[in-house]
Image (cartoon, rainbow, N blue to C red; front, side):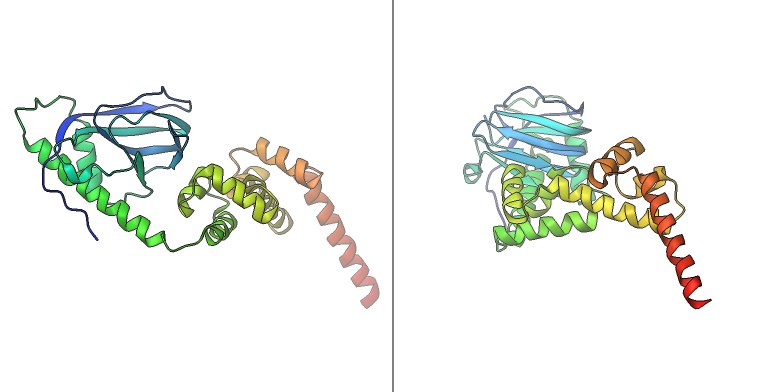
Length: 277
C-alpha cells in the first residue's frame, strides 16, 4: 500500500558535509531531517537507545525534534535536507527514525543532491518549487521504505541470523563492517551480535576472520601469489593485519605455513615414487 499525502511540506534548508571516522555531536532539528549517506558507513544512536546502521546509499529519516548522534566507522559524505511537515497531518505517525537501506534510484539521488545544495531558507509565506520537489522526494522515499520493510517483514529472526551467517561466508572479501551485515538482514547491530553468538557460539567478526583465513590457506597451498595479494583477495586491509591474524588463529606465520605444506607435499610425492618405483 503506497503512502499519499494531501498537503505540501515546506523546504527549510539543505547542506552537504564530509564526515570523519568519529562520533558526531548530539543534535536535533526542528524539522524532519532526511540524511542520504552518499559515502561511508556507521550507525546513528537515538535518545531512546535504539541504534540504526547505515552504509553508502542508505537514507535515514529522523522525525522532527529527535535527538541523535552519528558514529562513522568509515569516512564519508552526507547530504541533508530539513523539512517542516507540520502542515501534513498524515505524516504525524512517522516513528522517531526510519531507514532505507539501499537507495539505488539515479533520479532520487539527483533530487537529493540538488536539494542538499540549496542552502537558503524559504520564508513560510513564499512556497516555491523547492517545497513541491522536497514533498515529492519525501513521498517517494517513504514508499520505498515501506516496500523494503514489507519485502522482509515475513522473515523470522532465526532466519535472519542464518542469512547473516551465509552473507559473511559468501562476501567475506568485501565486508567492511558488521553494520553492513546487520543492514542486510534488517536487525540492529547489537541485537544481531547477541543472537549470532547465541546461535553459533562465536562472534560474527571471528567467523569473518576464520573464513578469510580459510581462503588464505587455499591460496597459500595452491597459488604462487605473494602474501600482499593474498591479503587483498581475502579482504584484509593490509598485509600486516593479515600476518597478525594468521599467526593468532593458525599458530604460525603465512610464510611458515606455505613452506610446511610444500614440504609435506614433497615428502608425500617422494614416498609415492618409492612405492611405485
